[in-house]
Image (tube, rainbow, N blue to C red):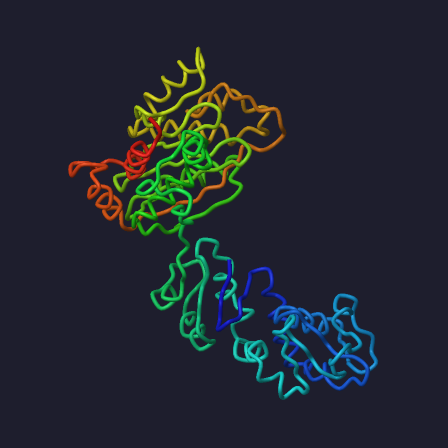
Length: 403
């Protein structure tokens, strides 16, 4: 993701440029940007300046009348309007700052960062923070905080407290702007937008738990899990030890998305909807659920729901084994047999060459009692309710569902 130091943001893909720009400063490249009588340097932002310094260093640019590398040629242009030759300008529109000499540029935050952050911009520790996809971002006031936090930490080991203090937790998006079952009643078509398909069901379950005070935070994320190794990683994520309940969001954008809620005792329940087939209330065996299939297909699905739905603890080893078998098929078009063993929509057919892969996000609910208490106060659930958070959220949804 990103690391923020002061007002500057560093992304994993740009770190090599910043490390090279540190060397460019040591090599005196910034001084060569000034003094032309016919041209000036223009950069849309600090990152563009950093990129140019890295390019000029690699090209061994000597300034003056020497040709500029093609990658930055557009940044070195003749002045227009009130622009002055021999200067450096950073920014856009009304936010442009003009620097007329190296001494001026040296006071800029981007230049100071290349000096003060020289020891860290190319370091494994800083790179590991920028590669952290679980955190929203890492935030430091200045480079002295970076130095204190990273000192002694070995990437790949647990984050020490002095480092986690700078970690901004990644939380799910609030859904309150669209889904407010306390103050709004919904038509059937509106309700289908929330729980009538797989993606919305996951979004509104997880988002509603957050909006009810669950303090949900992302603790693990993996993308493109496929094959034997991907299946092993999925199993590891589902079976890992978590100190609080977790909502495990499993996604293949082309076929299906579902939520496994896992309790601290290791048991898990499956929550889902399936577009054109059934909504999340039907899968939870609530009275106001909607199902739009029939015949043998419905009979098969009801049997699966008896084992995997209704808020019951699922046979997790069996579910994981069947998911792994599906993930080990070479293409979706060949995954029909493996798919039919899964409790989603067995009769669904796939005719494309996509992969039977999954993205997985593990959301930990750090305040589960806050969610239950918020619903108890409104008598959505009673004091004895100790079941799944997702089931409680769906109970609230049923109260708001059309008759």
